[in-house]
Length: 209
Image (tube, rainbow, N blue to C red; front, side, top):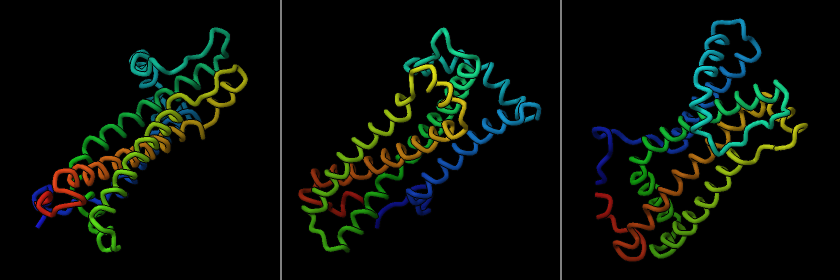
């Protein structure tokens, strides 16, 4: 019998973890969007205070992100600064979610392996599928991280349009939510590959006891 985490309780399902993370991320970004539309409210004032106070720290943390050219308009500068904060929040929430959820990877790999077994896949076939899935998830992580961090426009006209849209702020939690899902799937597939190598082709149930 597999030992459950958390005092004998069944770990959460992966899709529930991802949905909670994305909900938290989107909620935080919606607060930022609300502060843009209603700057005279308590929420708006608090968010703007936080953005102004943490701007220098965010710029250091996101040093790899492009910043507005010297001739950029004030609207572009404000929009880029706001986006950097939405991105930083999304990165922080995603990092915390992945770090906490990795403890469940053994259980998730166990469940996935059992589903593949019930579907009629042999031990060798399960190991091959897990390795292929792991490699694809690594590629997917690289692609979504690139889109989230480096796919912004650079010319003056596109910058102003891009960063003035509220939809631009929402792309950060959505892309990083996808990244988190791919990371957790990669770790889960990796567990299957790991145990298949330790116990021969496919899983040995002893690896989960």
